[in-house]
Image 1: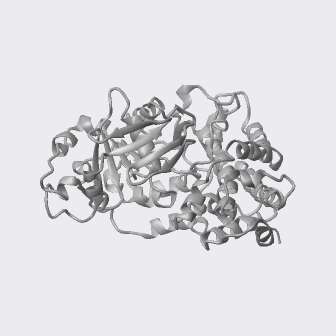
Image 2: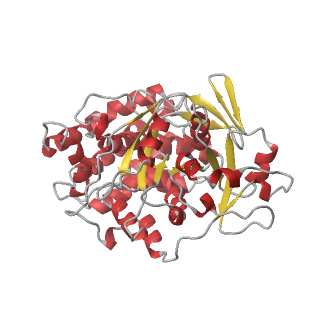
Image 3: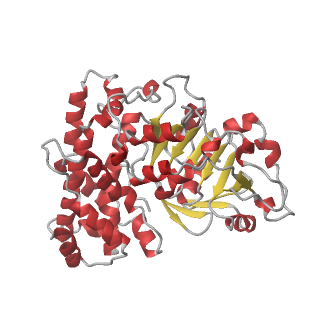
Length: 469
């Protein structure tokens, strides 16, 4: 279950609150700052080292599994208007189900294609009642509202042979996979994305495509300057899996969507950007709103602080969230303080680093405050003294919840710790030193990553020995 809640994402009247017209302000070219190959994170280096062309992908549907099934996929997706409106949801886990169910309740309903990650889910879909999600005691069920596909470079041996998006371009894509798979899976779709496409990432954690790495990824993987528009969502709802295609919407909250990178510096903004933003912002039960680029960045940073503190500790201690906050003077509290101290130092350095200038400069254009003043206020906001009460307030609200990382650990699944604590470690390596010239210390986060990835289960005393010594 997500540990974020409504209280964190309430709109604040702050230096980052801009007029709605500014939401899609262009990302300025980064002429003043660029990364060197030695600073490339592992995910980016892996993708850039792969020189293979974007693969041709086939869209398998249930009729490629069962010849007795017929559909109208060919007649609908060949229509350009359908592709302009169609929303492809890559990944049908908890987040994919949440967004699919809410979007399908729009009036008029947009065409929606669910894209599963393995072939075996197609016959399961055939036999199932479709997508089911229980919300506030009521069951949502939908099957005819969706088309379902599996995308692969292997051509089907029976039924129609179709390429993804009928060999045209995907205009609206929601990436709802686990965080580690999000960029690699989207990267495989380069053949079907261009500057008219919008890709919204739904994962927890920081978007990997924020400056400085986002521009480098787009320029190298789309050398014709024809890369897609990148959006991201901060999803605060808590959703639990109850089996394939079935979830419990356990903690209704809210969602925000905003731009990360837009392709409107040399051409008009693609219609898919406002279309996808608006359809998410107005979806029933999603309780969503559109926010500016700077607001999105800060929201993701703040959520990262919470997720990198609560999630891994509950996974190692095998406890509910509230256990972490029972003794404000105990060992766990000291571990939380160490983690917050390291997080604060990294984020304060990042806020004042040249790579974030273009993100923050957009917001200063709508106010009388200078970039220096904005950075001072954000530096204070991400100080240890302000992060600690924020974390404890959230911890109290979500005290009865089970974190998503603990759920994954119990199920023997890979966790998202590399996208929470790992992001902080990578960012510290990229930044190097703080404003005083001291090396950024993320040793506690490193040790916690090792504990989670080794499957360690510790009590409070042993946790302190491992992380505070």
